[in-house]
Length: 239
Ligand SMILES: [Zn+2]
Image (cartoon, rainbow, N blue to C red; front, side):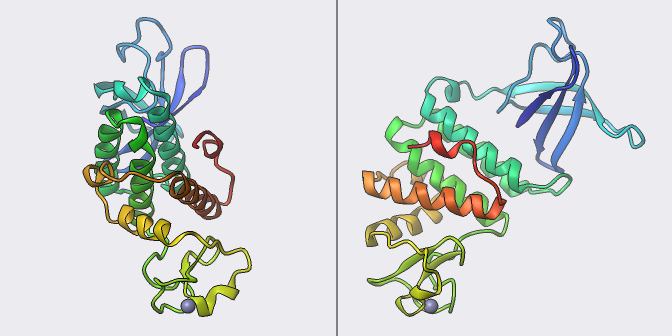
C-alpha cells in the first residue's frame, strides 16, 4: 500500500501498488473504525493480499479485505530508512500509472524495502540510489551512464559531463550542448555506474564518500523531478 487519503469520517481512498495490475485506487469503507473488517488501520508500506470488489459503474472499486503479510517494521525504527522508503514511494507514485502492470518492478520494490529494513545508516544512501536507478530502468527512464546521452559515443574519461535535461553523461565534445551540465568527480560517475548494476545485497556493500553521496543525491533528485515535471517533496529530507 502506498498512499492513503481521508474520504469521510471512517473511510479512506487507498492507492495500492499491486503485483499484477500496477497502481490501483480503492475505497476502504470503515477502515478508520476501531473494529474495522481490515483488522486495524492500514498504513503506507504495508505488504499484503487485497481482495477488491470491482464496481465498473461506481467509479472507485471497493477494498473488501486486506491481509497484511508484513508492515516492514524495520523501516519505522530508523528515520533515514523511513525517509528513503518515502522517497521511493514518491517516485513510484509519480511514475507508475494506474492499471499498468510492472511485475518485476513490484518484486524489486518488495526486495528493496526488505533490504532497507535492516540497512545500516551509512548504507541507506547507496541502497536507495540503486533502488531508484532500478526503478527508472524498469520504467524505461534510466539515465544513460555509459554512452554519451547526446551523440551515443564513449563517455568515460576526464571532462565527462552529466546532464539532467539530456538524460545522462555527455562526452567532452558534447559538453556544450547543455550549459547546465554537471561536472561530477570521475569517482562519482564510476560509483553511479556500479550502483546502476547493483542488486540490494551488492548496493549494501558500497560505501559513498560525502562528495559522492552529495553529487549522486543531487543528480537523482534533479533527474526525477525533470522526469516527473514537478518538485519532489522528499528530496529536501535526504542528505
Ligand atoms: Zn557526445
